[in-house]
Structures are given as structure tokens and as C-alpha cells.
Length: 216
Image (tube, rainbow, N blue to C red; front, side, top):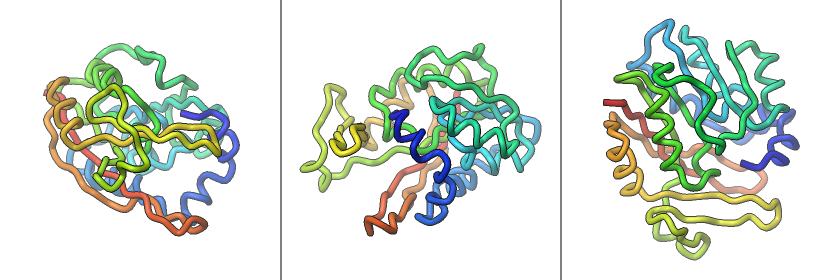
């Protein structure tokens, strides 16, 4: 994930998200709601300013959060959403927690900025308690994306380089995600395709798929 982008957008991130109809936090929480209990512990990987974690906090969960942007975390701290926050490079595995610590882990708007996500899935398996919930979003690769994205060495993953802002975005196939969840022995409980973002300035929509899975 690009630290310079996080720094530049940190102070306007919440207002920018609202203006451009960033619906992903609400969609993800609604999909998880029936599997949650008060006093459970949740880890938000890439917590940012806390938009995705906030509804879980309101539902009575204890929130841990990791992000590689201190600027984002400063804003999250000011909202009193998270009980414990830590600045951390999300690609630096293992993550700084003991095994089987969390009842629920979320990664919202993270994996479309991350390559080689299989290692993250194995790490999330380590951190989750038995029957723990993992909810995450991906940007699904479709045939019409083939002119913009190029395949990587990982079958089921495609890459696009934004030369203007010098960062990478990734798309993943539905088949790849299905096989990956099987590899870590997670069961997919449900998913939903939705419009996550409507850019006012660029007049375009960004569609994600959110999955909810459970550690067996």
C-alpha cells in the first residue's frame, strides 16, 4: 500500500469517502452482523481512519487495528473507535499478535492494493480462533478488464500500474479466491457484489465483492 497516498489523503479521507458514496463499510458489517457477539475481539487489517471498524465497535466488539499510515491512525485515535492501534507494514508477516487471538478479522479495501495475498490468508488463519470469522473485499477480474490489467506470476491475479501516482492495483478471479479459502480450510458463508465507490470527479463506479468466511 502506498504511504504517500495515505498521508496526502488522511485528513480529507472521511469527507472524500462520504462525497463519493463509499458504501463498503456498511455492506461488510451487514454481512457479518448475524455472526457477531458482544465482547468479541476484532482485528481490522488496514484500519485507516476507522470507517470499517466503527459499526463493529458500536455493536460492542473490542477493536484492534493495524495500518501503515500514522496519519490515518491519528485520525482513528481521535474517534475512540479502536481499543488498540499499531502502525505496521501489512506486508511484513507474521503480524504482531499471538495465534488464535481474534474472533473476527476484516480487511476492507485492502487486497486490491496487495499482491501475493495467499500469505495473508495463512496468517489470518493463524490469528483466528476456531470458528472465527474473516470478512474481506476483492476487486473481481472480468474479461473486459483484460486490456487494462496484465496477469502476474500468480494464476488468478492481475495487475495494473498507475503511472501518474506510482502505485499498483490488483484484481483477483473468483476461482482463485475459492481455491485460496479451501487451502486455508475456510468455509465461505456468503458474498455480495456491490458498487463500493462512485467517483464524483471521475464519473465512474468501482465494484467490489465482499466475502464472509469461517475458519473450520
